[in-house]
Length: 364
Image 1 (cartoon, rainbow, N blue to C red):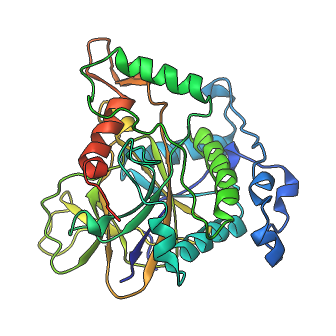
Image 2 (image 1 turned 180 degrees about the vertical axis):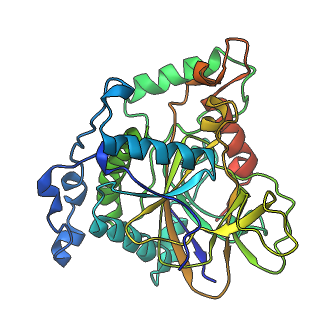
């Protein structure tokens, strides 16, 4: 969940996945029809239903509607690697609730004290695990002007799961030494708004189901002119990013090839296009692991956020990732063999964290 000061036409395809996902009918109820419901400690418990995910056994079993969705999804993943996702079944009331909680967290009168109380800390420093918590990226790097509250999947297996994870790392002493304890902590929720602790787990559970149905920062030499950068140009680490954002236009920019031909510009040249919010839809992009699995057939598209002015743009990206220990290599369907280069997702994740903020400490 991040915020950055603020600064028609759709440039991305729209994919409807409703043929592959449905929710129990009672979830159509208004979940935010009263202030009491908004502030209830039980919000999260009420927002974790099980989705119905029809999974045809073979391609021949696809319905016509599913075939249409698959074809559209395949084309969008191939190019431009970004698309709008509709038919996901997440109630708009819940989407707005999550954005409202984010805005409360970042803009309340006493927000700074609340944020500092859960500031990200290095491994072994109090509750720190090197990754979770609030960070003011402006305090780390002057070319990025945004704040973020980072939450990760927790090791729900408790001490046994942590021990197994540490044993795995010990078996590979050459892999990322000096990061003992990284990502082994618990998520840090703010004292205010207290409802965030209860609403977000249910929201995440829904998006995990959406991810199942659809089954860090990099260097960039582009000139930003005099635009203020809310988040520098980068690709995403894992499989899918499902972005929920407020209505701010002109902020999210996607670098694509083969856009509309303009005077003096070849149509095959890469250019930046807007990915403005579409009400009720998620902006979805593929990540580095899909590019690895497909041998480059699908590209993890570079994107950035610009801003200007004094307001805040609120965004809540959800990253649908592989398990930490998954080994990723090109799939046979894309010509992959056992001799192909491979990457273990944990190594890739840590390299990105290390390159973006792990070594950069925020001190309060």
